[in-house]
Amino acid sequence: MSEFQPPIPSLGVPSFREFVLSSLKVGCLGFGGPAGQIALMHREWVDEKRWIDEPRYLHALSYCTLLPGPEAQQLATYIGWLLHGVRGGLVAGLLFVLPGAVLVTALAWLYAAHGDQPWLAAAFWGVKAAVLALVAEALQRVGKRALKGRIDLVIAVLAFVALAVFSAPFPVVILAAALTGLIGSRGVAKPAAVAQAPVPLARTLGVTALWLVIWLAPLVAVVLALGQGHWLSRVGEVFAALAAVTFGGAYAMLAWLQQQAVEVQGWLTTAQMIDGLGLAETTPGPLVLVNGFVGFMAGWNNGGWVWGLAGAAMALWQTFAPSFLYIFAGAPYAERLRQSPAATGLLRAVTAAVLGVIGSLALWFALHVVFTDAAMLETPWGGRLSMPVWGSFDLWALVLAVAAGAALIRFHVNVMLVIVGCALVGLAKWGLGM
Image (cartoon, rainbow, N blue to C red):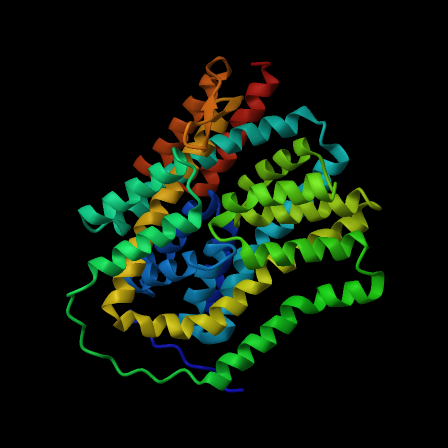
């Protein structure tokens, strides 16, 4: 099966070795959730390396936000595919996940074996403040580039209000933005067509079949070997379903994951689930690396660390393998849509709406960093608002987050230095009994 050759980006192609090293850097420094990771890739590949231009980057981002699963990993895979075909996509997608996956799995073992150590909680307290600053920096960077006019700003604000205040479903918000962009594109002159090779149907079917087999083979093997009722088989089934249907990013996935992992399967407790989310938020890579924590705890509670590794591996594979299917089969068609004013307008509006989504997530995260307790309020319109308990205000967390934000945004301090510094502040605060 011959590989479909993507169009050459306009700003040049790096050597494969250069791209591998840059992808590893992105994977190791990708803190701050999707907002921080998308901003990091923009800074690395658009601003500094200039390997891809901004319209191409934003087009790829808009396409990835329409897919189920981790959009930041899919964006890395898409950029890798543009620059070096399938091998570039594999390198970018795998290296985006591997550093964080290894770290989350190691921390899951540390948590399972020694989770009652107060110094560990103190370090995580500091890192959470740094992550809040990273999200603020990401919003500033992405917003400055994604908002090209008043309409984009209006869409972003309305998306933020719909999610943060009215608890609107993410697919509804994205669909409304897409329709707005589609209507706004009417009457826009179509640009001069750039000749592109057609995407062979046989190629699409072959790629889809290949990646379906790669994705589901481990699950099928475990079911055949251990039986469908085995906990490891259920881990695979739950996370395969999760990867196929969870539109809206990591936070949209958490409610469903909480229900399945805690209430239905009983793999871990609610408190352990929240701690796992904290671990995932303070490590590089996508927030859905929390899935690896859940898989590890399921295995740990069913037989110790060896089974924990098996559970983490199954959960992570079922979460991230489908991204390669979505990109390698779908990206060639997404590239052809770049010639369509309707598609361009639709995706631009979706990008603006996603900025509002990121803003709502940043607000949610800020409430849980600056306040140690929050209450859920039922609204007259059927939504749920997370409101801080004012007596739980943590002045030190706010001060540390503001200082970290100033270091990142004003003084452009290295990301790793900021994160390590905040962790050390947390340890010092604990050591001084503050």
